[in-house]
Length: 307
Image (cartoon, rainbow, N blue to C red):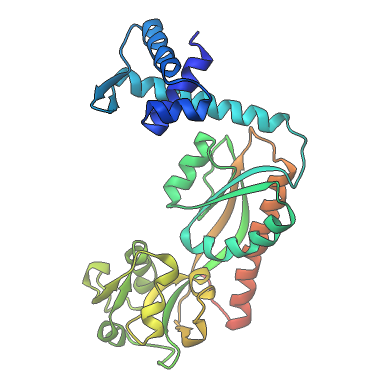
């Protein structure tokens, strides 16, 4: 079995990229760090690094050993966390969801964090595939997905649905024609083209021939900034309701009143083999409340026809 101390030293060396800083972080001497590395290499029978001036790169064996060291560190973290008292105000909670859903979720988490200084919450905005992968690998405690993953090791709870919205300036015709939209131009973003294929195929079947045919006015990669050009009267965009609802200038925007509505489902997903701790359950309740508020805001703003 590989020596745990040597593995920890190697992992820290890879993280810092520097022998002196590794020694400082671990309360060791620099020769001690070098000695741990040599002993680990001798035990494995393979070199782990290739020195390059003051730095180094990992060999193939080094890459494999680093993965093992990181995996063991995560297992140790999970063990220590499991052994802690199940206190709703202590410990780590890791959440992953879409960027649009993260916008209303983060403000809802802040009061809980103010009340519980011992609670550490990591919120990652990520594509759906990354959220699902994080759940499978155990890096995520709670994931919000647009579908039920239907996996035997995952538990999924339906939270509701979120409207996909055509967002236009507040002073424009609430029922724009496709010609109106092409004249204005699309404020595009990474998910926008997929949204266009979903929503425009329903509402402009005779004119819409695919997202690649849209007149693109701008491209914005920051979810919170996507509606900003539309506030200034420039173009239109497509967003889930959460992306519209949280914008500070939403009074200058409106959701177009299209005849056919499109909704994305919201599922709260966790691992079945990891029973929820009190702190994770508390955060899960907040996630459900945010999803419910999105549904209420839609019902208050307008009627809808599901598709």
